[in-house]
Length: 85
Image 1: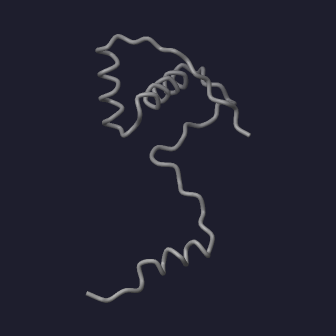
Image 2: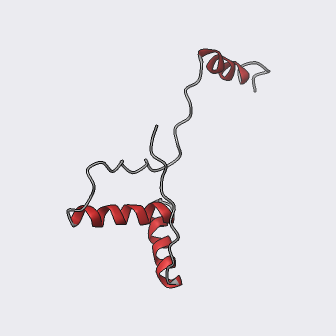
Image 3: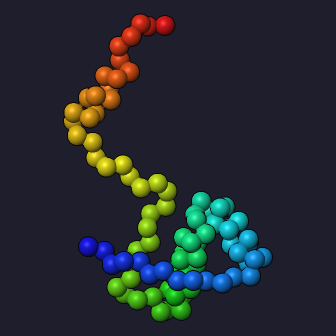
């Protein structure tokens, strides 16, 4: 089981937040993920990244759960029937 992620309150200047949010959007990350990315990079550059730190979550939507063969067959046959155009 993975360790629970820590939650913190972070107060930012509104202009800094806006710039950070734009940067995150440009890189297709959430603002939170962008902050973590930058903190990890700073820790690594300073030689302070803990060896036991878990990797960052992958970008994008989480993968779908694997379907059973029955579910795949049902999806495949759902659009198959009916009159041809």
